[in-house]
Image (cartoon, rainbow, N blue to C red; front, side, top):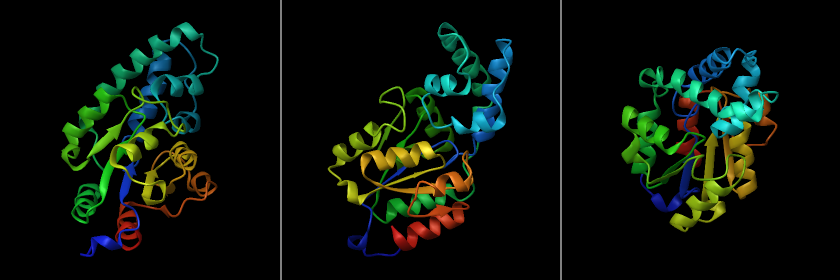
Length: 223
């Protein structure tokens, strides 16, 4: 991004984490399915498991396995965490993410994260990825209502005094795009994560990027 910060269209850019910045969709799906097997229940399909990514964990598990007795969701969550934590140290950012985030920060954008992860999980991801210092604020599902409720975005905008018209939400799921709509902010979809492109485009995002290269180029030229 070139000099001329005054020309920014979006003062604040908020990113989802899993499936948007970090290549973690496969690990999340495998962990959900393995947790179900641990409890002796039929695992959700690949499509169903991918669809719930981005929600808070308990909400996600309720959507993935709606017939499970309510008292067993905490047990399922514990097994999910066991399997995911065995994988998460090996998860990597998508190629080009670190450079894109650095460029956006240098261009003067306020960068933030709104995620379905817990605070503990996001802090661990920040540390492992090295990206933590690049984000000025973040909101997690154990601190706010789960997506698509607008609370995460509303709190971030209030924290920095940024108007909804100057805020952009970027994510790989319809939950992200619906949260943006509910908060009155622009949404950009990325089609390399959990939800199919056609589902994202049905929510009328300002753009739908096929990969990090397309995303970085659009942000450089349009944000």
